[in-house]
Length: 318
Ligand code: A3P
Image 1 (cartoon, helix red, strand yellow):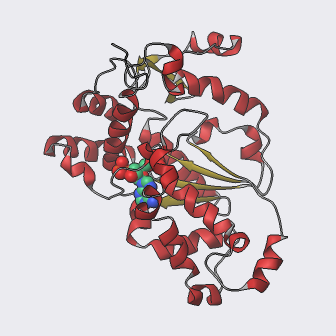
Image 2 (cartoon, helix red, strand yellow):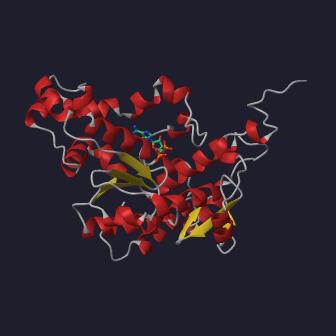
Image 3 (spheres, helix red, strand yellow):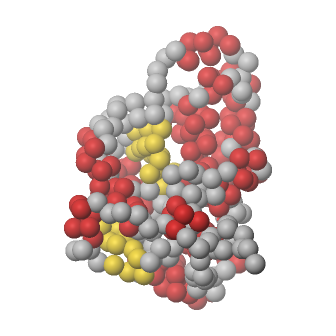
């Protein structure tokens, strides 16, 4: 009987890219031989590099990035802990910065012409912790927007996401919630420890508020207009009164809403070519508090306790 290739992968090339084996550079081979390891969630192992846990693919990618990436003054870096709304933030910032070019949200043709010719900028996304950012980013005046999410929803979202990615592999099985929970609370998750990641950027946003904006998923959900306008001011593209009246703010929020993005055909069927992730893996519930449906009262208490300990002395609450 012939098997369906995508359901029963037999060879490397049948697997999505994120599960395929690949050649390591000498530098990477040398480096990982000295790194602490832990059981991975999607691939076999995590490696601890510069205090944070990474897959092998990430280590291999981060080295050239640290060596060669040259930040430009006008670049914008979107930084997130995985599963904290990266996709949402990317859509919002793209729409915000390009709102005159596509002119979808305002009838003001005059300002369109003026601003279209104004400048070029590049928007980058990364999950790298502050300590691992390339020096050129640290030393340039480019702006960083950091988005985080409460650790309970982040964990549950990550667990679902990892299982979805594993389901494309061969006999990979399902990750146990309790095993992953144990690792997460010990700081062992992709780009974890979660708390160190968040604190690094939170401190940077205090020390350098002109360069780093710290946002929370929950606040974006609760007061989207306020947060979007804050973001626009930070990025040097504030909304004019006229735009506000014309519905530009609401237009961007609607365009980037979970309902709209998750129902686009490209997000139902498309795939990221570099990694092989299906776009639809980035849309699940998009709600605050969904973790309560998965975690026991003991788990919630434990995670709250770890968060309180880690953030003790900082005015950072979820
Ligand atoms: P859930 O798994 O809790 O639903 P990331 O983009 O960092 O991978 O984060 C994915 C999480 O953000 C998922 O959370 C996903 O559903 C949610 N999400 C995706 N698009 C969103 C949007 N436009 N608005 C709010 N949440 C969104």
